[in-house]
Length: 190
Image (tube, rainbow, N blue to C red; front, top):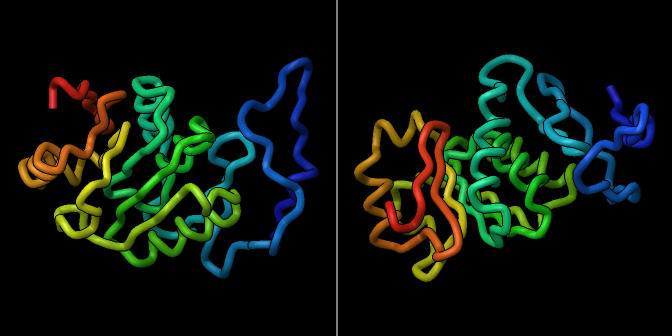
């Protein structure tokens, strides 16, 4: 099924769809492969997912909203355990000037996230890395982020390792916060 951005209205009874307007000049049309869907996530942004298996949920919307409210002027964002990119893509939609680094351990999720980033035309500011965020080599020695987001279920299993990496490496910049689905902490609380 082909998705035509131009066929979707931007205005409805005085209301305008918020967020960045994606360029209509597509380098290459990207369609879902067999077993995939292309779903609306925020404004004009779309997300590729598998038809069967884990799919993004409504929890992802408030998670991205909460983090971006804590740090509305973030210039750099780190997303640990990013999956197919649902929270990161919503945050990227809300923070159109920010640079993102996402870390995901599952190859299939990374493939879908890269496809979504290409579709949403944010590849130049949305870097997706395949790796385990508990591995200290997945991030550069001097990388620092204004906002750090993680998957709460993963942190529950390895909170000491993750917080140790965040503390030791000073990943959170002086501007903002670290956030998960259930927790937000200011840099002074880290």
